[in-house]
Image 1 (cartoon, rainbow, N blue to C red):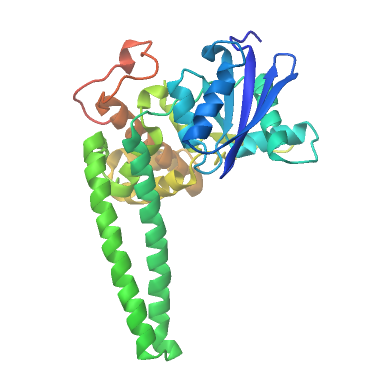
Image 2: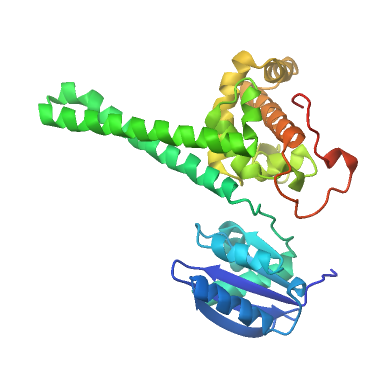
Length: 342
């Protein structure tokens, strides 16, 4: 397979440092390095990459999406002109297993990522330079954590009368529940303001879609022009079908669930609501039942329909707050200032 790259560099991010390994097309190790995860370490990393002797666009960086430790380095590399593929830990893990590797160290992981780049030829990952999308993602995650904490406190508070808990215990749980509720409301106001600034509030006009679903979808999809079709957005979220079949056995079709788990949770709950108030989603559900589909599969059809409506609406009303990484190749990808949901 022809590739414009001369070198692939695998980078394994850690909490305190980055492990790097550069390989050429023949899978030979050219250089190894380790830099601290800091501003000075990022500068050393860029100088090390430039010392490889080729242009930035001829070096493919394979960076593992380990927690949040890769974000700062990704921005530095992307701004310097390096194509960066953010690989999922599962893809790197299964590639290492395919090579029958039994040991696992940071240096070995970096070498595996470089080898993965030459084997899989992954495309560069495009993430928005607008930090507001990342801030929105973090706000939604913080709200989720507080909601889970409040549910646990509420359960403890409800069992107090049956456990004959002292009055002091009830007071502590009550104050904690009120404090968590106050912080959740504060985060929701911040989410609404940021969603309004990004233009994602248009998604809340879709029946069945609330604040958290609209915010999570906006933060995850970011620039919808990254996806030429709604099918690619479904696969990105993890709603693509997965087929398992062997021999004469009937094929088993399930969802791949390889995308964002939080987004699928929000879409599931939004679909439950939309079945009662969104005529398009309800029609897709009833049409599937009329064709003899099971209730579970009919719900998936409704889920797909709501996701397509979300993607079409966001794509049609997406504000050009910054220049896209690559210009649209067809007229239907350009921004349209007005119109309804897809």
